[in-house]
Amino acid sequence: MPDQPGYPTPPPFPPPAAAQAPSFGNPPPYPPPYPQIPQIVVPQIRQGGGFARAIFTTLAVSVFGLSLTLNIYLLFASGLFSGHEREIEKTTLIDGDSKNVIAVLGVNGEINSSTSTEIAEAVKEIASDSDVKAVLVRMNTPGGEVTASDEIYDQLQRLKKENHLPVVVSMSGLATSGGYYIACAADKVYAERTTWTGNIGVLLPRYNLSKLGEKYGIEDATIKSTGADFKDAGSLFKPDTPEQTAYLQDLADKAFAVFKKVVAEGRKLDPATVDRIANGKVYSGEEAARLKLVDAVGYEQDAIDAAKSLAGLTGVSAKVVKYERTHSIFDSLGGGSRQSSQLGKAQLGPGGLSVDPATVREWLAPRPMYFWSGQ
Image (cartoon, rainbow, N blue to C red):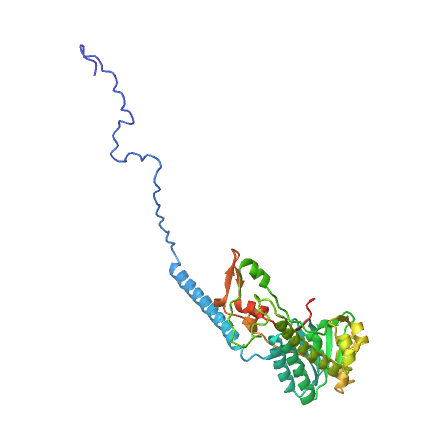
């Protein structure tokens, strides 16, 4: 439409500023910091095969869970019940006539009550087997507890006397102290050329911290019954009296006298010769043979041949079988006879070092040992 005369065209209307523009659909922005608005993720539903897949997954998980539960149950059941009736495992080392068996026993590591128990169970099995004609003891030990060593020595003596089985010892790397004590029960003893044996003597390990206690104000306030003056002999935190020292020395000397008697009887040596040899020294296989502590320098096969000869099996293809007690799952996990309750353990330091008070008391208490401390 053409402009009419007298009415000028108005200028174009300026656009409104952004800040002035009303916004009814969106709220004004928040000042920083901006709040985090959670996002809702809607799972996608897969089409096709969903029900069948769910059924298959449920069945697979159920079977796996049942299998896992059953295995755990069997594992712990075997650990719990096998501890009472553990069987003796028989491993054939040399095949031969099953009616003429040479039974092999192993004495390895430190000798303690657990060692004695295991040997006793194996000896019981051997004694009940009429096919066993001789026993070979394969040894690699630094010795250990006095009582445990004496128990094993007695068990071998009984095999000889009650079951009329010859016993031969074959020494490997070590057969010191309690190990040599046990060897004295044998009819014949072989040591390898590099064997270390002997170390006849007794240790009474103990520690005295009385001077340390004085420095830090620690005092042993243990009360003992009236008249029992030797009840606390060997206390950690009380200085030794001459009387208590003499008392403990006498105990060690008496155990030493038993050791020397066993050597004299087992090796058929006169007491004066034993006194000269029984000085705590460790001897090589050749030195031990020269001193008549062993019969000859030889290896395991030589000992097997000697066992066959003593049993009258020369020329016979004898079967050599190792007898050893099976171990439960708890033994394999480090339990065994020395396993203690976790309730009695204390944690030391940030690293969480576990300290069992019962074990500490056991090791700190004076106890006689047929043990080579150089090991």
